[in-house]
Length: 526
Ligand SMILES: [Fe+2]
Picture 1 (cartoon, helix red, strand yellow):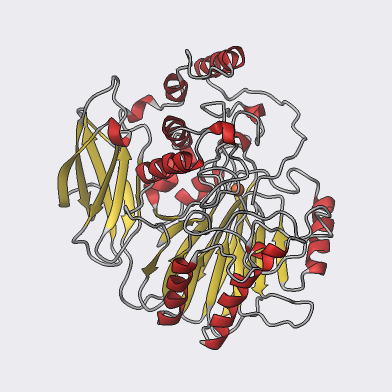
Picture 2 (tube, rainbow, N blue to C red):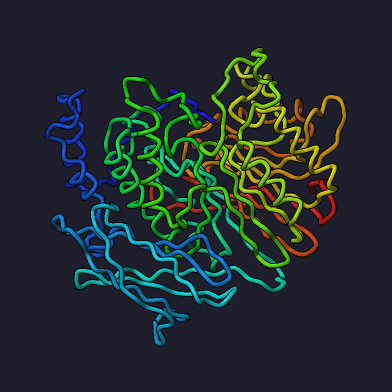
């Protein structure tokens, strides 16, 4: 959804900042206040970002990443940061079956340049299915850290394991949930459901009291702005480590462009910020440069993980979404052709669901799909019209399609809300209780949420009120930050919510907060 805002921050202070880093941030901040709105003058955001560099990683400060695994291919990624601008840089890459690279399986060279922000992306082919690989890069006389990745299986598996994440906001704190996922044995994939970055300026949506300040400190609009923001985020240790250790399958939500973005506009795009299509193109270009994703004209796509699961990733923002409607009484909400996916993606999605022969159909969905009544908790927002509740006709079409084709064992995942959810996916529950799937929502990695830092009693009361109004909701947590871990077996799927104790320091502990299971053939959560 759009971002929610809370006023609660009491400055603690900034003990953990390196003095030099603090100096650069303060300098940049002072300069900003003196220079606004002529922000392009005299502000060297490149240097501000560089204050977060770990010198030991030179020139691969942003680490390595992999993603979009297939049985025989995987994308590997890095970014080179030269001391001075260079017209081109030759980068050697190597991939092996062991971390010591005793026998290199594949290697080659590629050239990068400022035209792609010195990012490096290779679609390595000729690989074996279901295999763990290690990879590294060499440039400017130095080697990168070693990445670990895995191709998708083609044979029957005893289990598959996916971490599901969304909504990481730099200013809200250290990306500790990412760091904890990085510590796990290799996953089949990390499903990133979007809000990988946020577009806001300093303090607009965040808590800067630990000194995590956006760079640039104004709202990002241009290609240079988006590149700078991605560069900053990728210097978080947790984000660097999770990319190093696991393949990603990523989709954008709205904040990769601007709050509540659609095909034609965004809530957080104003005319004085320039042409929306140009902004969207800049955001999209940067996303493709910085993410380990395969180049394509559309981001919605699917993956087979053998007989056990198909993963279907939906693009609910930029592929076909109609403009937002904020008034629940607006009759256009119920227009027959109102769409979130667009006709082409909807037809593709239905075809994917119908043709899948896998045991589980795992949907990478951004916004909550099930009906959700919010009056008891958010009186001013009885329904969240930024979610599928704002597209009731298209939602019903999909549910009717599932019923008509007797499609079972659908697991919908959801991000966006900054809350955890376990839902027997259903609509119109006031008239009939007919779940058609299960829906699991992952909380935010760090973005602030509805009960941020509230005491246990307050949290429990709000959650009980929400569950009372929504009998299909079995679990909600609107306070803690972490991730969802899904383990798919031939006979059941297990969902576990892990939270971290703190985002305010880079070192913390995680704990298992909740677990639900659903058996194959059932939509009942237990
Ligand atoms: Fe978010």
